Structures are given as structure tokens and as C-alpha cells.
Image (cartoon, rainbow, N blue to C red; front, side, top):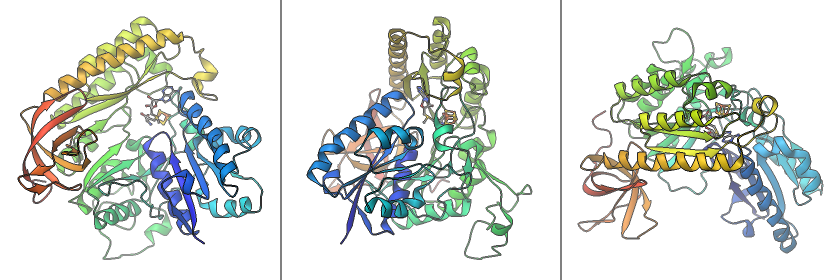
Length: 478
Ligand code: SAM
Ligand code: SF4
């Protein structure tokens, strides 16, 4: 009998991507992915620990599983991802409904663990690895629009930002073999996908060094990437992120390429040069600043100061005047004074971000900040500062979006607009949402089409455009 799994992803894009790896591993074990927990024999919650609120949401969802289990006696429930490592004891001892706990580096063991669960026992594997990249696993795309997809290029993080739990929950940084990344992108093109986002916690520290066995793979004329992953002119033997971007841009010239996340301390001009060179690499960079105050950045252990960050901004604008920039900001980090908060607002004003993800600081167990600094900014002050940051960003987004009015943008259509079935939505290279009419003189726009659109109006969150033509050959100007 067909076994059915429902996977629910919380948190970042990396978790969405991991769920697709899990679906692939389980497909080999006879599972089909279904679209609701009610239809499933196995429910897997792929969890996030980044803030306390994220964990609370998952805990509520785990409680809901009790009533599902009461209705479906055979149902098994598993917890995957960041909370697995952090809370395995709590989950297995206090949440009786949980049968299975599996950390982000242990997904290959899922079939064995499920066999154990099948005999009525609880199963757990939260071991972190220094090598696991799931490199050769072809993900099963879940909830896909058939147009855009994520490709994980590295796992873990070695940075130890003082506020962040990721290095504890996802382990040491490791990069994936570039050949397997290029192969996955090519496979996506063959399946009709038009855009890929390369994912890592700090893509700028991507580094692949060939192992002797990888080099021994020998000359294979069907491979456009040297088996070692090295561009032909490289003498150091390593592939860095700029090299990888170029490899993907050349191997998949019709595919739009995005990536996330850059780290200000590691972002090189070499990456910017490659971005500027290839029309199929989107002119959009997510560069989390976290704070505009050098003193706060030092306490956060981010490895750069305000002047360094602003220099990176200037370099982006020099290389790509049309590049859009988004960021992450934390309000009320340990010891943050009113002046330091004002420095964040002034930096936002100076940069003029297109978009930002903004959070109140949430203390996370084991982190450097939890051990070293009191979480001393009162909750209402954090709330007020966050509201001011959000307000500043609204103004900045509205200004940036208004600056696009009158321009011609290439838009990749992703789907039908949520507000009106008469409209479609897509994104320009800068990652802003563009709404256009579905009907183009009798021709109906479909997801996956590239169109030229003249931007006619804007809000802080989206652009309205008029389609002036279909793009015959995407990125012909590359
Ligand atoms: N690796 C990325 C980087 O360094 O920019 C970001 C990773 S994290 C999943 C996404 C964002 O969550 C961070 O940029 C930060 O703004 C926020 N974040 C992380 N830990 C946090 C905490 N303890 N409290 C509030 N926000 C946090
Ligand atoms: Fe966390 Fe810093 Fe690593 Fe990003 S770079 S995942 S914020 S430790």
C-alpha cells in the first residue's frame, strides 16, 4: 500500500529546501507527499529555532497533532530541523504525540528510524555532521509553482554571531560539490523551471576544494564543469562563490539566478563583478546589517562595523547602479541605547533599502549573547524601536518602488494575483512584485513567461505594470 507523508516547513528558505530533500529520501522508501496532515500516515514538522516565537508556534502545532492522532490511530508524527537538536529531550519526554525526532544532518537515516517507529518505539537521531551536504540527492519539489526553485549550496554556519542559534542547531559550515549544484540547476531547466535561488547561511564563504577522489574522476567530455569543480583558469584548486555563480550562469543561460544570504564581512567585489557581467544573475542582494551602530555590531560579533557595511553598499552601487538591496534588522539587542537605535534609523535612511525583515531581539539558549550579556532592553522599548524601524522601512520601500515608475522591466510571471483573477503577478530582477493584466490582447499570460513591462504605478509593497511584449529569448542581452 502507498504510504503518505505530509511535510510542513517553518522558518527560513533552507528548511523549505531541506523538506524537499526529505521528500526525496522518503520517496525511495515508498512514500508519496500529500497536501494535508489529514490525508497522511506520517506528518513531519520541519522546525525553526531562530526566535522563541517560532518555537512556540511549532509547539502549538505539535499539540494539535493529538486530536489528529485520536482520529487516525496509525498516524506517526515526527519533528525535524533546528528544534530537533535543541529540544529532543523535551519533545520525546513531554510531548507523547511525537514518535520521531531527526536533526538536519540525519535525514538519510529516516527510513531506518521509521522502521523502528513502525514497531511502536520512539526513534531519534540528532547527530550533526561535518560532511553531509545531501549533494547527490535530487529533491522532490513540494508546493511548487513550476517556475521558481531553491537549491542549497552549503549547510551549517561557522560565524557565531552572538544572537544566533543556527551554528548550534545546524552545525559546522560545509560546501556542496559545484558539479552537483550545476547538475541540479540543469535538471530544473529541463523540467521547465525559470528561476533558481542558491541558498546558504553565508554564501560568500562558499568554498569547495576538490578531494583526491573527486579529481580522480577523470576527464569526462559531457561535463562542462571541471570534475574538480574548478574553473579552467583557477590555480588555487578551490571554487569560491563568485566562481560558482559564474559556473551556474554559464551552464544555464536561460535560467534566472538569485542567491541568499550574503554576509557583509565576506562579500567580495569579485562576486559583484560576476553579478554585473551576467544578465541572468538578478540585480538583487540581501545583505543583513542587523544594526547601524558599530558598538552594537561589535557586541553582536558580526565582524564588520558601520563604515565597512557602507563601503560594501557603495561598491554594490558602483558595480550595479540598478541593484536593489534588502536587509535584516534586530531591534533591542542586549545593551542597545537610544543613540545606538537612532544609528540604525540613520543607516536605513542613508542606504535606502528596498525591503527589510525586522525583528525584536529574542534571547536564544547557548548563544554567546545569552552567556555574556543580559537581555536588558525592556519589552515595550523593543516594541517601540521595532515599530520605528518598520515605519522607516515603509517610507524607504515606497520611495524605492516609486523610483521604478516609468522604467521598463523584465518580469518573470509566477502565478495568478491573489487579489484578482484578472491579473498575474511576477518579479523583476530587483525582486519586487509586479502586477500585470492577465490578458494581453487575446493572449493569456501563463506562469513561466518572461515579459517586458512598463512600470505604471507603485505602492510600498508592489509595482503595477503594463506588458509591452513577450521576451522571445530571455537574457539575450547577456
Ligand atoms: N545567515 C544570515 C545572516 O547572517 O545574515 C541570516 C540567518 S537568520 C536565519 C535570519 C535573521 O534572523 C538574521 O539575519 C537575524 O536578523 C534574525 N535573527 C537571528 N537570531 C535572532 C534572534 N536571536 N533574535 C531576533 N532575530 C534574530
Ligand atoms: Fe546566524 Fe550569523 Fe551564521 Fe547568519 S552568519 S546563520 S546570523 S551565526
